[in-house]
Image (cartoon, helix red, strand yellow):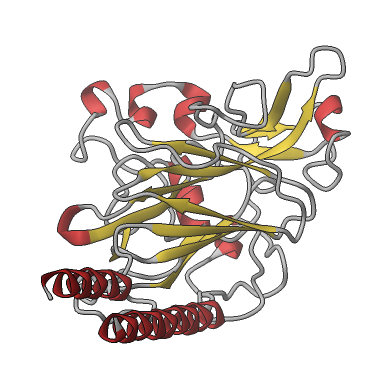
Length: 334
């Protein structure tokens, strides 16, 4: 009898574990909507468990998923105009190169300029913190859309996993800034790199540097006497980025309008060169910065994707309920 009771208790515990929301991890789904191959780079923060990959090729129209462990923090970006040297085999990229000499970044970060997606999962208050940063410059348009959340109360799925913050929403920079980049910040493709990826510059501008990288002064880098929010203010250059992409980080102390939060357990869709033809993301103002839309209209939020994410998480929970019920039934029959 005691053995049967212990077995029943074990089965019940397993069933309860199946029912618990996976608030300790997240899935990142990366999609390449650019007209050329990009090579995502992934870097885990100090003291954070590594991801299953630190770099790979992502062809036009392709998607890939990466699962993040509990309390992961780090960044992701797109490398462009990449190729392996025919003689040495060394792999390098014209933008976003991580210096590893291979497709895997192996702990190397993005060489600026590069558009960055930054995450801290399950941080303060049980929230995920995320942003798209142009502080280190820009190379491709990028969009982050929260897909679904499992809140502590067992809710979620509204696309706003954190009712307290009200900031669980899409963010990014949807427009191609390379052509409109100020001349003293503009990075041009070399002849060799332009031949490596048609459509990703083709000899024209391929990236836009930050003023800090271009000039290296404390005023633009928010260092020295300018190393605090009281003395480091937006510059003409950072305002170029902010005007075109109001939700993206434009300089070091641009927190209030650029950091977003969702409940821990949210998954995220990251799109390079996102479509801009549907939805409700109307925060972009490219015309004010002299930027033309990349694919028609400038409105996009990904409401359909959020709905898809909600349906997906609901289906997953239903499956877990079925499995848990079957486990309990089996235990009773033993």
